[in-house]
Length: 235
Image 1 (tube, helix red, strand yellow):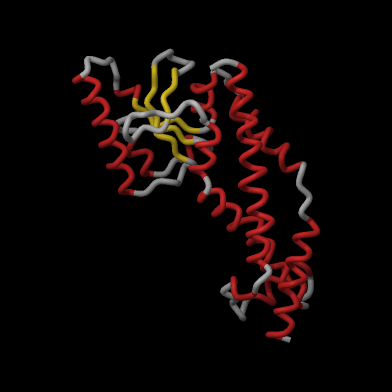
Image 2 (cartoon, rainbow, N blue to C red):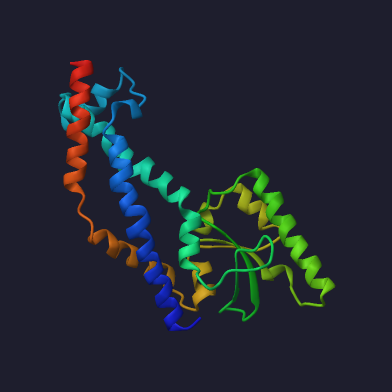
């Protein structure tokens, strides 16, 4: 992969986060977080959590204790997970595969061999049934390759995980690795781009998008709106 292609991946990642993640976070997650009906409020805990966070349990403190974990944790994680296929499509324009069950094909910059790759988001993003499906897809591709006299080895059928560390891989990925290689995070991006530090370069590039965003006023407006509902219901 040449430098121009690597830069294109960086630009694609930035555009994806601007258009898909940031706007969804502001327009969707914050709006939902401002409504009390979105929460399963535990009446035994909400005042405690507010005091724990701010030192008092007025409606705004309660709202803050509810809103912050939602918009900084679960909502953005869920949003990212739901949009991961869009991310993959954005990042890997031009690398798609016409082979059934394969997301992208590329020349491995470490061993020089062509790889047939299924892309996954993170180290915990597949379930028990996915293991059999992936292995069957790979077996099918290798059988077809033998029929067509193509040199496709076991190490050429790979699962690549966009982010994470090897130590974080779930037991489902570890089952797959008993049959076919699983490359995650830095290892995957090194093989794809030829740059050992590209994974961290990509993370930094996405971090640059965060510097463009100051949603503190939106967060405060969300907390204020929720606090009004809390005051009406519980005070």
